[in-house]
Length: 267
Length: 291
Image: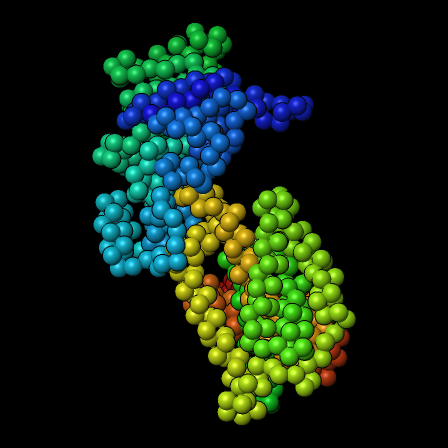
């Protein structure tokens, strides 16, 4: 349902710092796929997600979503059907606005915003139910300003905001990287629950190889702006971290010396 | 003393409308908008020239507000489509408005001594001359505050607030942040121009220099108000801007009574703002030293 055809992205074109981050990249995402994306730093993973979301324009190639060419569509238009959760828990919510105000914004994502009240009791009731499902007690604090919440709570909220109106595509950019281990597990469980329950096509960047293997039905490894590995189904389920490293080294023809990634440690 | 309070109240409220405008750009939109030094006298100029030539003073208010919105629109356009940084965009519009305002007035000031202002009408409708300014200002400001508070609680209002609070998140939720910026700047400068139009009728003249220091006065009002009330719900936040405006004008009035010259006011304003900004820090410092 998402097709990336020959995507090229160059930063600082024509200058000394020119950097070809994505190089003639092709990707075919099927409806219902849950794809983990891994790779060393500079591989182009975040850029890939940002290209899909429309934060950056492409220098070559096209993006088709359900056969509709969205290559030239501005970011905020694509946001109507693309949900995003960022690495920084502060990025996905408006800190000076309350939980219910943030959720109201999420609720209007796919609609034209009008001069009607942003909140009413009906909406509040719906929000209360959805927040209760998160199991964090946020439904009792709906008029608290979001900046008073912890990182894990904000990230859970961002996840809810990104998926409340079911998106065609969910983009997760290392969304557990800045959280403590206990919260990481909580958010990962939540992610899987929401994605499976609602059947949302998802792309998830992670630096944690174990998460990448355990979650989702498909795994992609990127290196130097290209996709070097694309594993799915049963082959993916039987993978180990060592397998991945061996496969990478044979494809990329260099040593995989990023200890941090192997051990799944935070930056 | 009583007179001082009443005058400060009058000024606090009429300039409070300007403070609300500054509140919308600086606090809600998080946009450092300097256009206001130009849109305040723009409102005054437009309204005065219309009234001078016998036009309906209420219509003059509306046209002045529209002119202010136009100025805000230009700054917004320069920033979003022209890719000029916010501060500079505001300065450009403000600078251009100096010449434009002179053109509108045809000279450097316009006197409204015997002209028919909105106060003439309110007096005709039975409000005693002594209270006509205060009453008019209160009525107009209450209406404006209700409209602004309501707007900031609509879907569009939320989008505007999110644009200022976290533009990345706003865009990720489908908000056209460029359009929101332009909208916010238009509303803000419309309010500031309205304030200018009212002040011109209040003081009986419009002058090319009356805009100088508007942004500082507006910021002083917003900051003082925030120091007293703090950043809470929308209704309280807009009220704090108005309260801050009153206290600011009162402080100036007291300073003048104490013998300071009018030329000292800029320094006093600066000191007042520094005190207001330092207060939370001073409070915390005292607390940590005495504990």
